[in-house]
Image (cartoon, rainbow, N blue to C red; front, side):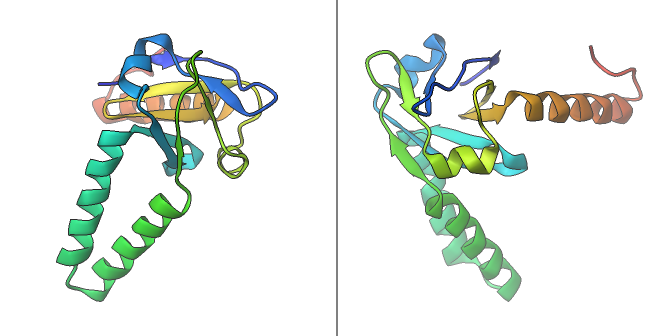
Length: 147
């Protein structure tokens, strides 16, 4: 399970240090792909395989034209943008240029633990998203925004 928020920096070669607490879980490799809200999803290999099996099952089970179209689009987005990476000895992964461009990554990044995956965000985009999410969450609970 991935928890917490970390703020590593991309180096000039597009490499990112994964937080030390996650390195054992990802030492065999990861798959990086486009995520929602202009972030990147980082899955350990076993979790990506599980996600792939779910997508395959959804494609087989799709009955309506809308369901078929939705699963085709999701499959294309997930696999078409995916890159498998193996962390180096220092725990760095290379984020491919196309994925860095998609997520607007420059130097300052935020890595967010999101249960079965990590998310990589541009730090400014994460702060804006998080502020909006906090406000929406507070409104939903009829409370003051979280600090």
